[in-house]
Structure formats: C-alpha cells, structure tokens
Image (cartoon, rainbow, N blue to C red; front, side):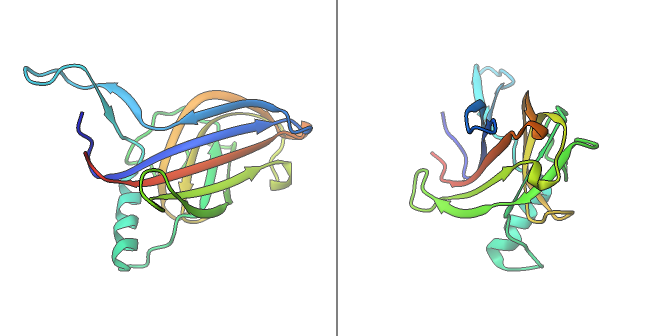
Length: 179
C-alpha cells in the first residue's frame, strides 16, 4: 500500500492514581476505514484524518516563516466524543476541557528528528476538579484561542482529579515521507 507524504499525528495517554499506579492507557493514531471499492482498488486503506485545515495552514506558515505562525506547544483534553473533522478549530467539549503547555522536543520515528513531541501532565493542580470521562485530546499553538493542529477521540476513560489522578498526554506529529 502506498502512503502519501505529509504529517501524521498520534497520541498516547496514561492515567495514574495518586500512588502512581496506572489506571488506564490509550494509544490513538491513524483511523482505519473502509475505502470506497472500485474495480481497481478493494479493501481497507489507512486514511489520516487528524490534521485540521487551520493546522495545515499554520504549518505552511511555519515552514516559510510567513504570516505570523506560532509553534505548536500545547496539549488539550476534553470529554466530548464528537467525531473528528478537519474543519474543527477547538476541543468539542462544552465544559470539561483544559489546555496546558507541554514539554516540547523532536524525536526520531523513521528519520532523525522527524517527529514533534509534546508531553503534558494534567492534574488537580491545573484547576481541574471532579471526575471526567476524558474522550478527546488535541494539539494547539496557544493555551487559549490559537490554532488546533489535530484532534483525536477515543473510548471514554475516567479520571478522578479530586482523588489525585494524573493524566500524561504525549502528542506526536511526524513529518512523513511517502512510499
């Protein structure tokens, strides 16, 4: 199967209780969907639907240092299960959502330093309270407003912030060569 050049997003989430024990983990990346069958192509294809329209435009500005581009350094979480859309510009949760600046680095996935990595750990110290059914995560270039690079949903998982749970989110965006 041929893949196209471009950006590929993925997320890794780990929720721990106050003793540091893992309560749950989630790995989310590309979506596997059924490709419309034609006479020449049948079966499943890996379709990447994580990168947003505004995210693509911001990346183009960063590449050419044109406009007023801002680097992607922020991770957001929320409790909405609304399906991903390239047209989205924010998390879809109406109330239970939070953004936080993360630790940014480049890591190697296929080629040296081909992947942006942002790691942020959420806890009650971030003014989050109660119990959330975390179901979405995204990457932004600002802690409020700004541009969302990508957003991904996953099966709802519970975090009890008042009981001391923490949620570490590792977001990656790989610049990928086609094959």
